[in-house]
Length: 195
Image 1 (cartoon, one colour):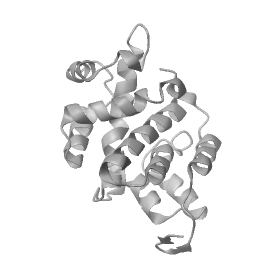
Image 2 (cartoon, helix red, strand yellow):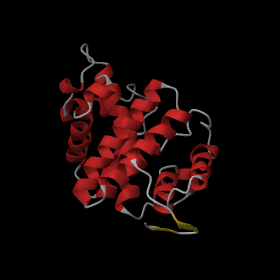
Image 3 (cartoon, helix red, strand yellow):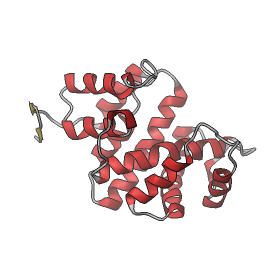
Image 4 (cartoon, helix red, strand yellow):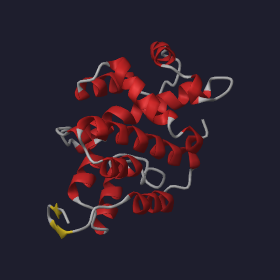
């Protein structure tokens, strides 16, 4: 079992456990679907950067699991971190989740942390692009459509475009390639996302 920082030895959390925790704290189906999409994108980047897809997927599933109950900073992420610590989740997972929120001021100094930041806003944006299609299908979304919508400041106004471009740069990936990677990951679970 891995060493877990200030906690003794704990087994890594698996997907089944992470899903149970997500469902316990998140009733909203759209928030759950966001978590599934981030999980898929994180697994894709784990394969690209030599990470553990299970571990990276758990980070994706749980990154916002506390948001429905505690949506305001700094409670969002910090309440979740306390719950994860109480359950013995290892520090790498907890710190990666904390790092995606700027108010925690945790450096994004590992591929895992960079990937979570990079995919979070982009997943939401791609979802918005799919939802304005008449068919509401991810299959009809391509990189060009996402790039065009990024230029439209009135579209999905809450999504910070700079986070999407900064995320790609942090990963050292071309923006179009980044969009393609996340889009393909989401398309692979389109049925679960109902898109």
